[in-house]
Amino acid sequence: MIEIIDDYLSTVYFGYIEEVCTSSYFEWFTTDNITDDQNPKLSYLGFSHPILINGEFPNSNFSNSLCGFLYDTLSLVKKKNVIRSRFDMTVYNPNKLMHNPHVDLEDPYIPNITTILYITDNVDSDTIIFDKKITSKEDKKNVDISNLKILKQIQPKKNRMVIFDGSYLHTGHSPIYENKRILINSNFV
Image (cartoon, rainbow, N blue to C red; front, side):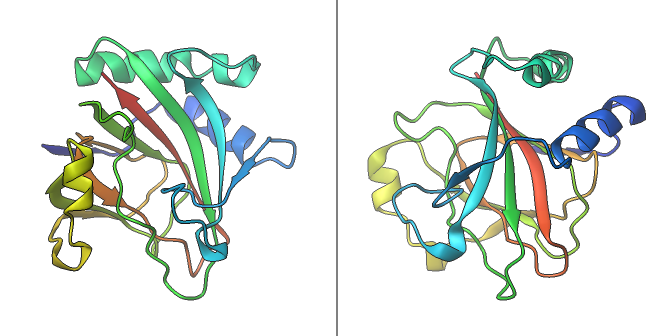
């Protein structure tokens, strides 16, 4: 099941989120590899901002203002808990860089529903959901990335929500036409 919902949030609420996370005072934290901490490379550099970690909101008024978004989404995906939610940002890379295929909740592997809410329009940095599920460390060890088939390719569009089984390998691209790609990535159990 892969579901795509355009215009997910109200225009006003989405506009508020977009304005805050693209402002010059929004705190972004660097990570050597936005999708896989096992393989740091300069080109995989990314930025994140936690909204909810292990079911807890960090001490941030902005994170607290996203409760409505998270609880509405929790109801939509028919799960009991939000385990993680964060902003992710990748930046311009002229080489059409595809990041490492991954699952979000990997150690330990936790069955979940993953959602992506795009904050920016990006014609050049699609999200790819592959046909391979990862449910254990052995699954990950035995993956031949060269043989993955694409289940769905989704173009980032402002206020577009993507919902899918979080055990599917997935990834995104760094933008080549825009200076940044921003999204909210959340996991529900």
